[in-house]
Image (cartoon, rainbow, N blue to C red; front, side):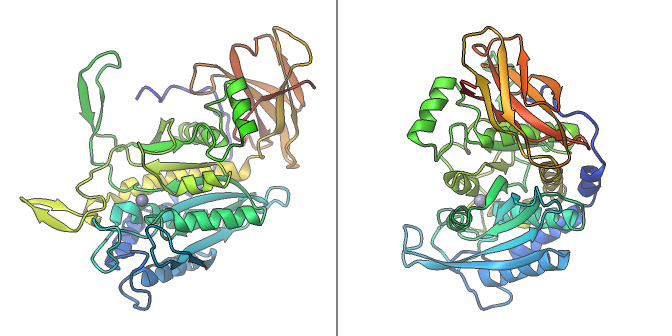
Length: 445
Ligand SMILES: [Zn+2]
């Protein structure tokens, strides 16, 4: 893949915690979670809630039990959704929420999420009684959430990790939207959201140009990759923020995009068994998912999805036509692939949780015209911070290319022009954990 270029960033050694947590993820358990979730027949938002064997109620009670069994503090989050297009009479929506509180007082307010939606649909979005096994969409992402919980519990994580299985994604991101807006209302600091949606079936071949300059196509297996989608211009940007983005040329530097770059960096550093195929688009073409509900509330959020999709399986009734099977059934979900996506999530969460927060007030100093560039920033508050890296890339480049370890300073000058590069700063701690990059704005001092 063109995008998997060698990276200069964050290859310094860090403790073996991420590798240990990745090794604790189980492919057998991940597949068993998918099989169990599909066994509830349907998890449609308007399906049965009383039965212990069928419907959305049974599914969420099982998920709650799994998080508790893993040792995570978990609860059901319930709210009444008003009537809307895909819920014409309104509905009670239930999310399953688990939390591992952060161990460092200065870092525990930062919350990092791993998300999957447990609801499903078949070919008829409003069919609440017919089978809708939703093995790939999205028992697979829900299984990633469970595996992350099982792999991370009991480990030293400085920031707070939240495990969120959302309801009613298929009815309009309803559960995620409620959760994100409520968190914003409480003033919570959601610093990064990893939404896993359709991460179970890597078998559809990915077709790409054989040579980027030509019109020959090749279709290839991409079982060692997962697409990572991120918004460029924030969905909730104000008019003033949009004006700044236009003026500074930072159309590809939202916090969500920095998070996507960060996940790629960590995947390379920890040699995750699946690598991000980074797509600079908020989601698949004209389609959506739970991460966008978090974006709408102003939080950095990205989506993981298989390299290619098979539409004969997704949102289909389980049937056979002309000898070809239809429907989103567990047979098409690869437990090892689900586990590998979970390992990538686990690695990213360990680094996000244990790194300092990104520096604040990062700005290029513009008091006078200079051909060099001076960048200033406010320190990250964690007591184990020992330094900062200045990073940069040409305006046409998609990934940070240059970095300079500045040490424990608040300002640094490089002899290259701010006309021609985008700059950012990240913090690192005594263990070598590095924060995502905070991109530089502009200020007179
Ligand atoms: Zn989905």
